[in-house]
Image 1 (cartoon, rainbow, N blue to C red):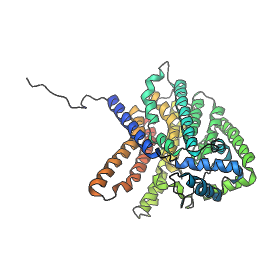
Image 2 (image 1 turned 30 degrees about the vertical axis):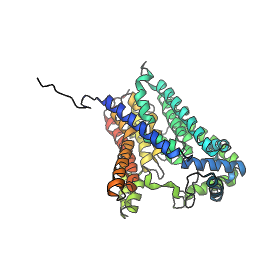
Image 3 (image 1 turned 90 degrees about the vertical axis):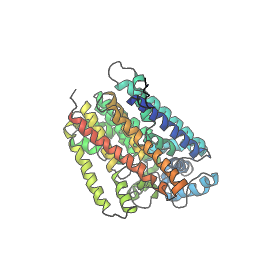
Image 4 (image 1 turned 90 degrees about the horizontal axis):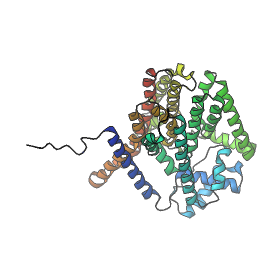
Length: 424
């Protein structure tokens, strides 16, 4: 009697595939981190933060927005340290309010390389502890937090979190602000919810949709909390930098969308601007900006379906609407890199735990981009060894477009699953 042999992966369930993919992505990240940082290189964003921190120590907060000061730090101090940073054509500006520069005022007193890893270790301890705290507070019934371990791992290995680590960016703070914004909303504490919304002043473009919605829907208590926190942040910033420093910051904001600040790298963003830039720059299709305009209109139109649910402050339907609002924000705002999508993590966790979105959608959000990235590495290696036509030079487009598409998937998933969501 012939015995039937099963294939290697024939008996794999979704959970088996999920665990295999998560483990593979962790290995990919570890290899990349070791290769990238073995010679003491530092994340490019953090170099800019460290630099403005050094300027605030030496010349005061009023001088941190002067490009000449940044160029001096880059060319004389950082280059002498031997860090792998191109400083000839690019100067990384930091258009943050002085209040948010305070941590780097102190970190810049430490060696740049040590400071970078202190910053990252501190941030990821905060991220881990906060997500455990968040899960404990929002999980239904007495379900143990351990049951959500795969969800936490998915969040941690998502490409936005990885990019935040390697660049040394500040998005853990934004994640906490969004998490507390929605958590207090669920607990029907609109003033506290609004207080945390003020933290988005770290990157004001993230307020481009939520603030008008708060005003249109007349959520006055949320607006009250936002006014208290934002007023405190602005007054503190004025105290630190003075009138002249704040005017320099405003001038920096006005010029930021232009070509002067080449570090914005629109080709690797995950918004409609990236689509237009690639169509124009890579394929000489100036009409691509028409596509961008239509795309932004369609993105905003998707929010129309959430309009009535936004009124139900703190309800499950409101939560799904907020996921749509911030996904749309990432898609249409002028400056939106992969790590910006970290703000979606608390809402995705809430939606998954409460069965508002299928687990597979959250899993795809966390894994699609690293899987595509791995694919570009394999194709690039094959191209280098056998064909040598420079395919790897276009890998950035694959990574950017995958992040853009998966973000739109989240947006339109909120519309689809909103229709079937029961009011609680």
